[in-house]
Length: 249
Image: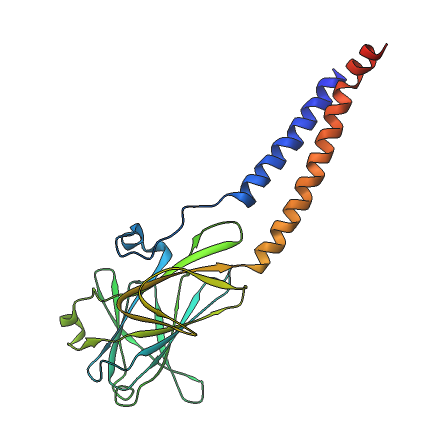
């Protein structure tokens, strides 16, 4: 009976160690930046944005992405050139406002929904000069591994221009402010890579973000796994000790 108890406890230790190992070692299917990828129909892992201008089609809009893992909201900050009349985002949960030159919060952007797109009208006073717009929305991330998430950024040319009042889609220069740790470009399509990422209309890029915080958690898991394996081995040995002693006699 005593041997059975030790064997059971040892088995539990090994089972928990295996479960923790699976948790930190499991890797999901890599995301693709292809326009044919399933993310096009399941938007939970990508940001689809478009910037519509009635002026110069060559001047890019600048977009800064700011998000820390575990935050409730991601921040998209647009620096718009003169002539931009509308921002279109593939999310109905987004909320945007004008940022005044002194950094204060200005006018909320008027919105109109069309299908799965939210059209954000730029205030008339901001159109001739351009300016900054900040948006909050729920984060769009996919878990790639225990320490890594992946996100697709897409300069989305699919919204109907007739609903924007006409114009052209601008290229978007994307910069990433990730406070969790380093990131790398996993794949890209119609994107120019450099210090910033230039997404032409229809261009997209898949970015893997590596979390130092989750890396620390993984290290603790590894320590716990080692302890559990040690305890489990000791308990299994204790379970078989009476049998070994009988054989030794």
